Length: 263
Image (cartoon, rainbow, N blue to C red; front, top):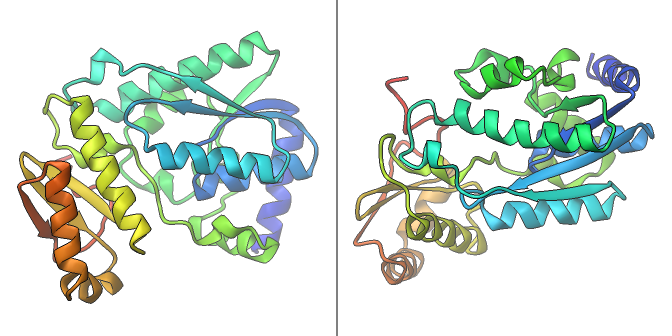
C-alpha cells in the first residue's frame, strides 16, 4: 500500500512539471524535496527565515539540501506586525504572508506551481494555515497521494534518510499564549532554552512561555531523566541564566496544540 502511494506521488510530481517547495527541513518537506530530486523534475526548495523560526531548523534544512544536491534558497522575512500580538488567527495570517513571498519567487523564476509538505494526517486536524494554502492555490502532493506521517517516516527509513525519526517542528510563536505582545527577547529565550535541551539529549521538547514561567513539555521517556539529579539542577540553573524565573515540567508531556485548547 505504501509503495503504491509513493508511485502515485511520483506521478503527481511529474505532472506538475516545475514547482517551488516550501521547505522547512521537517520530515514531510524533506521527503518531498528528496523525492522530487530523485525523479529529476525542475524544482527549487525555498525556506523562509523569520525571527520566530528556530535557527537550528534553518541550518538543518540547509544541510539536508546540500547533502542531496537539492537547489535551495533562503528568503528572509521581517517580523510581520500583523502577528506581533500573536492573534488567534496567527497561523492563517502567517501562511498567507509566507506563501505570498514564495509565490513571488516562483513567478520571478518561471515556476508553475507552489507545493508544500502537508500530509494526509494534517487534513484531519485543526490547522488554520490550510485555509491560506487553499486560497493561494498551493498544492499538497503528499496529501494528494494519501501519504500519512507514519508512511512518510517508513519510506525515509527504507531509503536510509536520517530525518526519518526527526521530531515534529513548529514556529516559536506556538510557545507563547495568544494575544500576547511578542518581543525578540522572548523568542531568543525560548530558542536558546530549546537548543539547550536538544543538546542535552531531549529532542522534540517544547518550552512554553507563561510570563516568567517556562513550562517544559517533553516526551514521556524523558521525565525521569529530567527530574533526576544532576539533569534537573543543570536545567534550572541554565534556564534562570536565560531569564526565566520559574521552571516547571508539564506532567501531560508534549502534545500539539497545547496552547490553543479553546480553538
